[in-house]
Image (tube, rainbow over all chains, first blue to last red; front, top):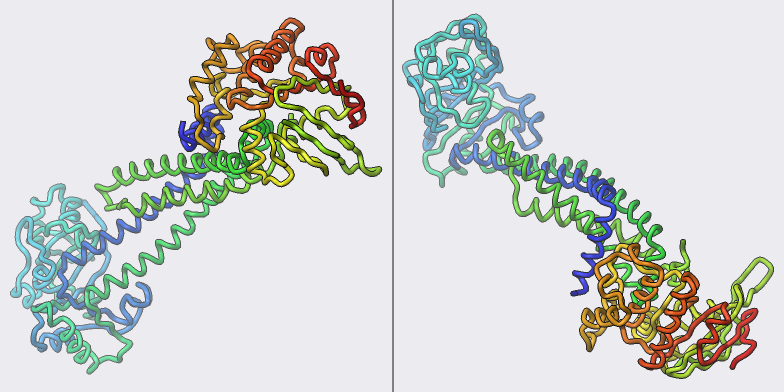
Length: 395
Length: 224
């Protein structure tokens, strides 16, 4: 028998004699690896999801947000700064090379249809919004330039909201809804795009929101589509120049879609790292559990160590034997934890795009092996350093 | 060959030094059959542990198979022990979670060089010779005391050692089984040419050997 096969077989034989203890010891690592892998896959899923959303918009998009945008975190960006209004839209529309200038007003609100009442988002925007996002009507139609100018009360519902209010989305077309006691006619239902706000939106011409919904006649953001992808940087400069005529530098931020994506990914990475660090605490606790059991194991098996030393085992042989046991214990927990995490990912994936990649697998197995070595080395050294005669006399 | 020159083993105790062994000079030649006889606390077991390289002397020289063990590192001592010396203990000292065959094969797993024989075949041959081959897959707790001691002797022989050190090998056995084990150890010496050293408090057991060494108060008091 090969030496390493011998070490592994010896360890497995020992586990077989105390299955409950082996299971409980591995449980700590199992929980730790499970939580770390889940957090990695959550971060990965979130990143993929956001990237996909941004990719759907194309790379020739410029986003104008009040304050310092996303670069100082979500809260900092959306809290203060410029209140964009129609004057800004008009001045931006004068710049050449811009395909779309789309204002967006958004408000979370209750939407009523007959006796049904659902939570949704009023989004006041222009007809170009549909072109910019590449969103089609799945039933009915979207509003037009004519509707914009006439401040018509025609709205387009997100498909999820339409289904919640009317049972099936097709029957929503032609029906009325009420928002803040104002009646609106549903002329179309937009296809689901996998964005919670858009899928539950009441999209209406931005001027229609003026009044009760948007008394300040302001916008939350302005999206600018550039016709030529190569001219995005130049267009961004022109947009900034135009806005500086009216606002201070700190009142707004103009971001290219890719910059914004990078910033968001950076924020996700930091949040994820913090979460993984918290999850790792359970791994350390699991490792301490392994060390505790391995110390008990060394004490229980002192005589066996003596016998093995008497028949030719070196200190290194004993060290390797106990290390193999702690690494296997830890790996066992790691593999089961990983398998459980993979199962949860499979179950949750239809609802949220959790991800599991080679990095997560390598991290799980690497961390559990490292824990086995780190927490196993002290008890193993204690076993190896027993003198043969003291060990063999131990009762 | 086993050679001890001016070997002392001293322990520090509350009222000074305690000499477990004092000025031991001893030569055991190859293929000898020797009994080390002494009462409890005489130092005979300490002597066996030092001969068997399980313990180191406080001072003095221990030469085993031509190697001065005082200059060897722990790993080399382990190798020497594994290659040249086989142990038989009063308590058998088999590992309970291993089968009979696995116990016998265990020393071969720690061999640092490739063995010139097939360990499995040789282990089975030994078990057959000692009439316990049908118990090869059994666990030690299913065996009688005599059978366990025969497994222990097979384990001691599996590396084809030059020396067998037996510490009270009949101490845990009834008279008839004890006789059987002594006969077996005698056969190993005569037929296989193995140096056999039996440590015992029992004069009857010691008399079975060709030469007796008496130990008292840590000193060799008589040699025959």
